[in-house]
Image (cartoon, rainbow, N blue to C red; front, top):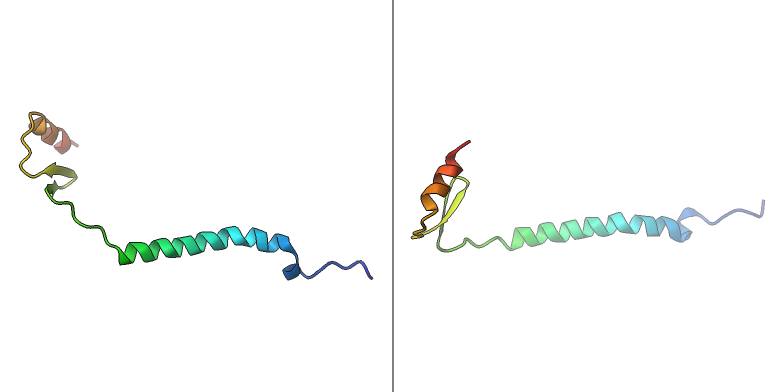
Amino acid sequence: MKNQGNPWWREPWPWLLMSGPLLAMVACGVTIWLAATHPDRPVDGVVRHGLVVEKVGATSAHAPAMRSAARQP
């Protein structure tokens, strides 16, 4: 039989189809490396109480109402 095709590794389509997931895996590795080597810096001037984040020394008229609304389940 003379009408045989090329082996799969000599065809462009398998490489094109594998390049997308391979690129995503490389990008995931770079993202994990960046997250591990560059930690977040703490924000100055804020205090966290559970899920509520408040500015230190903030005197707002809405602050008591916001605190009571945040504590309600």
